[in-house]
Length: 300
Image (cartoon, rainbow, N blue to C red; front, side):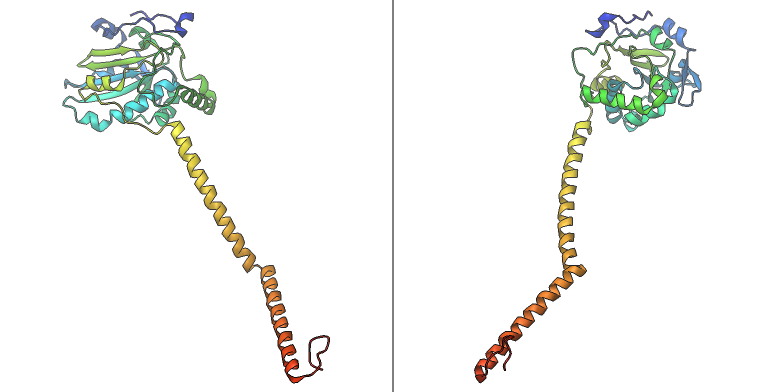
């Protein structure tokens, strides 16, 4: 299959691409192409979907863009919460899911951590599989935001930039930014269904993928988003600051009462009060006896 190359027009609109499954000849041509696991060990492409025994099985292979693509990361987050390993175990036909990206395998641990993907992830830095299986190159966002994206586009971009900066030298190993992917469902060595992306956020929606696997067409459950996390953290911070101010106020009151200076002042007040009470008592006693009162308030 031919792979259309990116052009200036790729920034806007969907690119014409079909969803015809690869033929047997197409699969034979890519069967021995190498893909790399997390340790950089090569495996033939065929070994990923063709079981060693003759048992019937299915494998959904998801081709993503570069490893820093926020759109694809959102897709895998939604897919991982909607189509879990336990859900696959409930199917009558043994079914597996795996992911292939076009970057270097050194970034696979980061990608798995960021997406929470429980499925094996491989790398095809050469992009030979992408090309031979008819996936295209484009930078178009398309006109519609997919349902699987629960983060906003700006949030996804910010996260992608942060990840690339954090990766250091790995920032240049994420893969071809123009390359888009797709989904291919292999059954008994052939592709029974496929979807090729027409823009950078055109993965098959989760309900459609679930139906193809034999599950119901339920939408992915809502996840904690970046913005809700900020709001929640802000609210928690406000409560903590309020509690701390109250704590400081109570502590200050206790300190004033219990400090040496505070104690001395209290004693001075008590002594002065006692002295004044004594003077009043002496004056009253002198008045009763008719004795003159001296300047200091005592009887002469």
